[in-house]
Length: 290
Image (cartoon, rainbow, N blue to C red; front, side):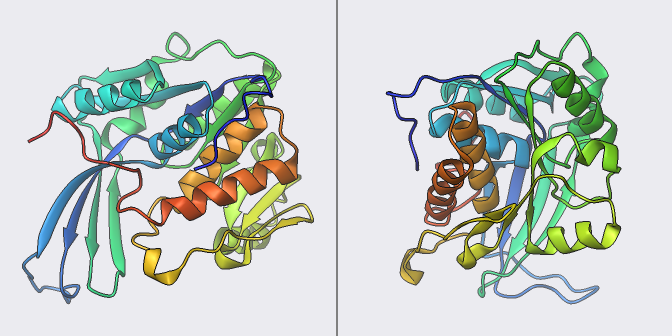
């Protein structure tokens, strides 16, 4: 994964405002038909959530990372906070909900590596409940990264606060939702895959700064094209989290003062690396869990 060049001083932090989920992954020979029950071949409990995935990726790329999010007041939430802290991420603004458990994603993967995913936000929906006392002070030079696995009112609030403080907003419009033009205009860039970009275009909301990821065809940011980093088919283990690795590394590079092209190239390297290990994060088992 791309590392920060020590010859270029960091200009700001990467502040991730987003989801923290635990992925419950069942591997099956085939997906069940409606009303059918199948037995799993194996089960894994791994760290996930788009926000946390991107925080891990940004930290791995050398950024000073602060995570803003909400977990449950449970063993999974405690283990996840420890995991983030062990990777050098500031978890001061990750708080525990007394009313909801830690967010979860229920994933089934068949022998053809096709998956189905059901996300239950749980505590993630309470991200904004602790604001403003739980929201960090922001500085010009900070890069605030947002996704859409938390309540959209929280996304808007965080983007507006970042804009007021002169911080840069990176908005990963995933999972896709229609957003008002006033919110989209605050992002530089909006990050979308090809399907999300098409839905955004169809919405008519417009996007002033748009970075589209195109898998093996690379990425384009307002006309600036960067090719994908090739990975041998035999080395591809799991594509889960590749987009989050891209966004996290992109934010780290932007916080370090990189140009658009430099940032996209660093992000492409991170995205390619992410498909070579299982799960959305490297060594994604939650330590302290049986």
